[in-house]
Image (cartoon, rainbow, N blue to C red):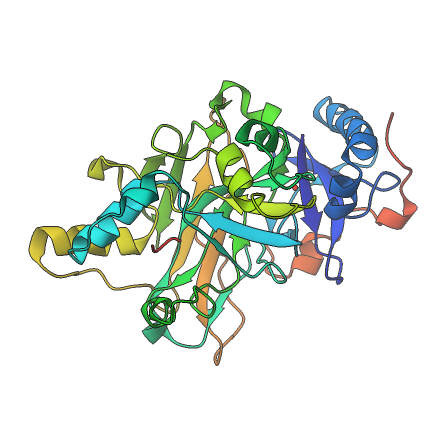
Length: 369
């Protein structure tokens, strides 16, 4: 099934079930109001949500309404934990090769991972607000899982069984702030601002055979200012699968339901596939030409990240964001890249959706080493 969190003026939004084709939605009123509630009591909440999902896909949901990604918060607007790995070692190899640094053998045996801020996730169409382009603004396209409870010391197989949902990710990085932070020997903080997520979170069964071995065997497409810069394969080159990444988090502590664990920047050895972040482009340029040529993102730039399922349809819905200045947030006259011209006011766009309070229960969500 597919789940989304819609904006209602609160911090945690309102849970909705979304059709497989992302065309319609239905509030989960009477089952749960937030996605965290579902994750806290998955065995009780998920069966009626699955029933509602089937009814919605069958076109028989009485209070269905058109699904609009602009109304979405992140599927989990805030989470108990956000731990992001770097499971695609090609990414790390490129970045280190560009600065003539060796790859420690331990990187191939033990996952790289950092713990990011999870109190303020961005929605799929939210503006990406930064104070300065001198910080080196960079997107990072990846996938993530949301877990149930995982016991301390769980094996990778046990950890993989805890995966409840998958999400699309744009893990923003500020490349010019990161080196000084890492030099302190204490990890990322200011260099990793709020992370954005795709419109819907999906259960693993929605991927069919593309979900196997704890990996997502699909391509991720990245468009920077409307131009495709990457069509990267997410499956084969993921060295550590999600069960191993979750087990890494759980080595010394319990992992609680609603924890989000990321794959890290999706990266392929075949440079013809392009990139999932600008840092890789700059690393390749340095390797080939001795210095980077591509600048990081500027105010007004757009990024679009999408992943199609085996049926050719968008699996999570696309992340489409525009980079804007903290000091000059004027209303946008045009919708983000790739969007048809529609009313800019989300409240107007949401006007056709029924009031959730009136609904019945049912009709039967180191990028740099």
